[in-house]
Image (cartoon, rainbow, N blue to C red; front, side, top):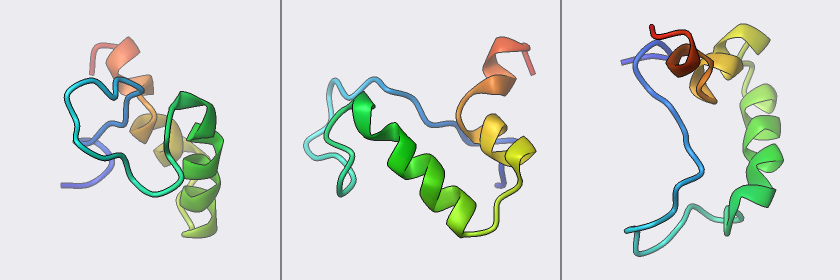
Length: 57
């Protein structure tokens, strides 16, 4: 699918369990840091974190 087709949000309503260490939105920097550790570009990280939704892409 790739970064153009996924997005991560902060709405945790309706889920039974969150990913490890993502108990709430205050831990999102940990997610961002892990994407960086895995070699994602800043442009791709912005896409994953929702930039494309604001631009209507």
